[in-house]
Every structure is written in structure tokens, then in C-alpha cells.
Image 1: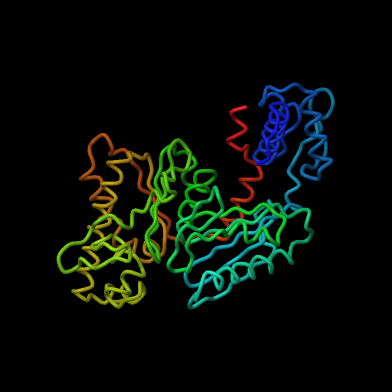
Image 2: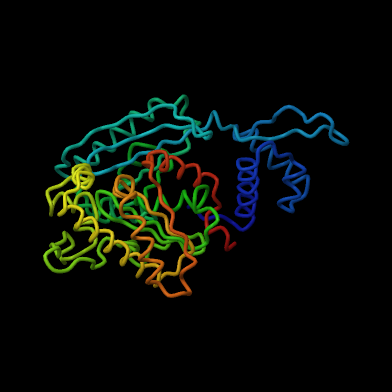
Amino acid sequence: MQKVSSQQGMKFINEQKVLNLIYNKTHITRVEIAERTGLTQQTITNIVNRLIEDGLVVEGQPIVGAKGRNPIPLAINASQMYAIGIEVAIKYIKGKLINFQNQVMAELRIDETNYESSEDTFESIRKAVYELVKKAPNNSGLKGIGVSLQALVDSKNGRIIYSPGLMMKDFPLVARLKEELDLPIYIENDVNLVAIIENQKGRLVHSENSIVLKLDHGIGGAIMNQKQLFVGSSHVAGEFGHIKAFTGENRYPCICGSAGCLTTLSSASGLLRNKGLTIDEFKEKIQGGYVEEKQLLNEIAEAVGKALSNVVTFLNPDRVLLVGQVVEKLGGYILPQVIRIVNETVPESCRDVHIIHNIEPLDESILAAELVIKKFLDIPLELLSL
């Protein structure tokens, strides 16, 4: 962000506060904004006039019957503001163009069976982005692009640290996209993105300290501390998939170089690699009463339960959100055991944790677009110190 003076910074902070209130509070008036912000009526009038002039805010019909002059409600010009969200998964790329009312304006899907190089992956991402940029009703209304990635991501510097599935290592994705696109671009690890959006407006909105655990193609985690994402010193905090969870004959080598990691059997890729079963095939055998698969299911539930118990003990969250295709397809079988193990094995001081789960697939392209909306409305942390 460009360096700004304290006066410029305060002006921007006040505008963002007003914009946030108008976005989140339906039909709010200038008087109500002044009351909520503590700013003077004249300051609010000046800010609102600028926002209307910039096409960000529109006025509604006057509220008849109010005392004095009929107040005029305000709203974000949501139907004329757009965001693009891209989900980059190991097997596909999905994208959506939405307006600020979360209405889908356009969408696409590119199925990829194999990424051969970082440039090959980048070209697929670039293709998806350009297809959706072309479908935006107008360029001035397009407020940015969000990208969700199954990768270790340095979101602050816009680079992909590492993703073996995407064939990318230390790749400057944002810089490469910005070579051709004059738009704000944000990238985030897929699990971190779920945590960010769910804390803003979803099932974690009332949580202060939470964990998201995603059991999917691989296993990833996200840690929220006082509503702020904790990424660690090298941007890889929350890699719960490499907790040591399996021993004996089920202690399989992991792609991380170790063995017995949670991801080796509790993820879709690990199950396929080490047992030769897709999630759907595994579920069918469980439903068919196959003894070996039922025993394996029990061991997976035990491993996830113990791993989560350790995580809850160390981090003491108030909520844990479980997501991903393993939860969606096998949750009915493993979650009761996982929750029981956590409740029985964590210290009493940690037993008020609420474990919640999502059995419907998440649309991470929508979450990536919502990240753009969040960034558009946010006050940058560096300005709060002015």
C-alpha cells in the first residue's frame, strides 16, 4: 500500500467505516451512521456524497412518517459491483463472477487431470481469470480477483510457497497476473480462506478463537486467534495433516518425508495411494459390511479424534469447524467417535469447545470472490496504527 499521511489515513478509515455500515446494515440513514460512528453529521454528509459520486452507494426512497424531514436510506450499489473468485484444486479449476449481492453472473470449470509444470498450471489459472474478466458487465465495477489454492501460500507477498499437486514452488502468482491485469488480486490457502470467511459471516462469526480442519484430497488446517488468522513465521501454521497418527502396519510413508502422518489414510489422496480406494469405494464397502474396511474406518476415526484432541489441548479454541469431502461423505460414520474421543481426552478446562461440521460441499470459488468483497471493505491493519 502506498505511504499516506495521518490525515489521509484517517479520511480513508472513516470512509471504510461508513462503507462497511452501509453494506452490513440494510437501509441505514445518515443520522444512524453518525450515531454509530461518533462522527459529525457534516462529516458523514461529506463522506456519503463522495461515495455516491464514486458510484459505490445509492440512495433509496425517503422513509415516510419519520419525525422531521423524511430520512433517506442508503445502500451499497451492489448490483453494479463485481468480484471474481477462482478455486484452484488438484483436479480442476472453478471460477465465478458475482456481484456484491452474491448473485452469480457467470461461471466456468476447467477439468485438469495433470499439471505438467508451474507454467502449465499458471496458464490454466490465467485462462480461467480472463474468461471471467471478459464477462464482467463493466471494468470499472470489477473490484478484484480472489484465488483459493490447495497450496502453502504467502498471501501477504502474493506467492505460492509450495504445492506438489499444482507443480508450483516459490511461484509469484499475484505478480504474474498483475503483469496483464490492473486489478487488486488476492490469493489464499483454501483452508485459511474458509476460516476467514466463516469468521466474518458464517458459522464462526461468534467465535474468537477457532480452528478449521479440512479433510479432503489432503488435510489442512487454519488457526484463528482473536479473529485474526495465525500463519506462523513461515506462513505454514495449521499443517495438521502431518501430525503423527498411525503406527504398525498402517504406518505408511508420507510425501513430507516422514511416516504415519494423519494424511496418509485420513485424506482422499492418502486412502487411494495406500489402500487403493476412492472415498466413494470406501463408503460402499463400509455400507456393504466389509470387515476390513470397517476396521480401517474405526482406525481413521480414532486417529482423527486423537489428533484433534491434541490440537484442542494445545490451542484451546472455542470452536472447531470440520469440512472437506471426507467429512461430507464419511462424517456420519466417523464424527460421533471423533467428538467422543475429544470430549473424553482433552483437559476439563478445554471441554467447552464446540465441534461443528459441514456436510454440504463448500463453493470455494464463491469464498474467493467474497474475499475480494471483504478486502474492498476492510480497513488495512497498517492504517489502524496511524
